[in-house]
Image 1 (tube, rainbow, N blue to C red):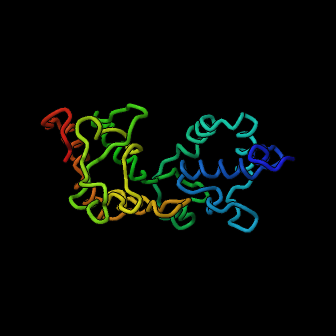
Image 2 (image 1 turned 135 degrees about the vertical axis):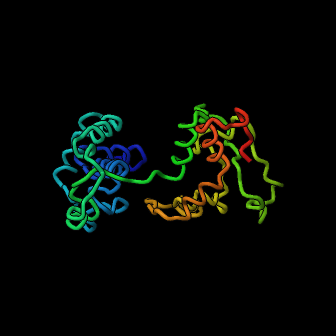
Image 3 (image 1 turned 90 degrees about the vertical axis):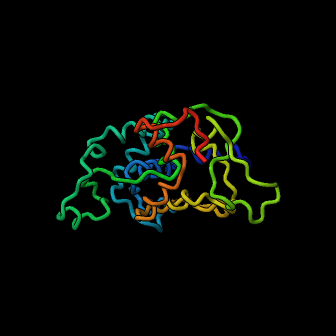
Length: 233
């Protein structure tokens, strides 16, 4: 085998090397169900957490490889399963027996990531601009947030429909994350992380009401908007 990047890529997806497929399947399972089949999804191996359902993990991994590493097909299989479509309600008995839902005794109940919360609000209100590609957008920021250490002048917010694109296109300084994003466990961009925290706090409810784009979405839903493309400032 040649010692180059192409050889590494071939080795990673080789049928005789099952770890890659297991890692991908476990990651997707974690996103759908809130908890991976292997709980330590950032560290999968013989010296980490044992799978709660090893046969299920292997079955999904084998099918994933056999169908050309088709992520869409794998996700469809997960979300159309009877396990996923269970009620998320839980009684005291099941909560005692299966507090983390490792035994899949109920459906998943997982909070959306910070970016998706904003995107969902814009989508429900009809404000979301679904344009794909293009430059980043300068979304609303609290006054003075970028002032400290900023050498490129004063922060200038975008206006009009640019403010209502998906959060993916938001321009965020590595050292100054948006406060409302931090409230919902968006990690600092100063370091790499492999798994986000999932918290639910009263402060999140107060903080989200301070976002002008969320308030604008609420006005649209209630029919009290004062302009199609408000500046959301």
